[in-house]
Length: 298
Ligand SMILES: *[C@@H]1O[C@H](CO)[C@@H](O)[C@H](O)[C@H]1NC(C)=O
Ligand SMILES: *[C@@H]1O[C@H](CO)[C@@H](O)[C@H](O)[C@H]1NC(C)=O
Ligand SMILES: *[C@@H]1O[C@H](CO)[C@@H](O)[C@H](O)[C@H]1NC(C)=O
Image (cartoon, helix red, strand yellow):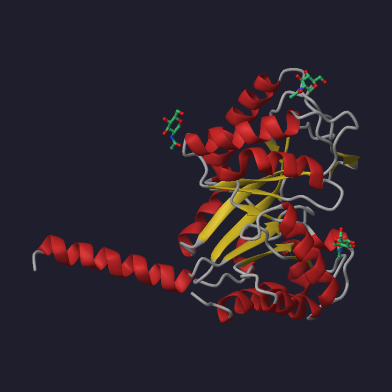
């Protein structure tokens, strides 16, 4: 066998074992939204999981929470501990870590944030693209998460168009490899519109199940079934809010088992957030990753 053959065999073997070990399991972890001095290194990361830190948040508003004339210029507002060097360091320590910037979130400086219909959608897209490009390059990011949580009453299709085109452009220019969206019960319809028009560039749906106020595993399963009818079943991730709303404690893991027994493949999960988990030793992050690895079927 030639050297070249040996080499290709090695590559194939490596690729297969990576596939085997990583098994396509993904973890989404929001971090940095509360302003607490949270560190990537404190969060337990299993080497066999495609682990995504979602930095909260980058916002198209000034530091007082006022929209920048609807112009789509994004600035980072996550915890000051999450520096470009910190992202680079955690990614070099864990080759399976990716970092995403989440767009908008709920509020800034006490002001509730909202999507708005930009006066010129193409200017919004162009400004969002260039400000995010600079953020992505500076912070060594791999993707974006979309978390607008409020919409104007006269919301036309500007959200679906602007965000869909933005993701398409960022992916086309290979600035990002992953894009996720984070609807909750009250924002399903603009996100369904976005999802249906741009499904091919949206990798996962970080649906906020904790906003559905389901407390029992059985109700969680029903909510999961419902939401996978609105978004694809393969892309919707079950989610958990630490010290938060919805299902709490080990009932979450019972819910995951029910979801799986119902025929869904639980290949990932989202947790909000690392900021809150620091107080309990990252119990839910550890247990969720164990769950994902223990249920490997492929
Ligand atoms: C949405 O409304 C704004 C004005 O509020 C308008 O400029 C824009 O073209 C509309 N967008 C779509 C996609 O209809
Ligand atoms: C980017 O878009 C151009 C024009 O549509 C297309 O030819 C090209 O293949 C795209 N590249 C990627 C990486 O998607
Ligand atoms: C699921 O959808 C059904 C039918 O629309 C609805 O009656 C039920 O309340 C929903 N359950 C949950 C937990 O969302």
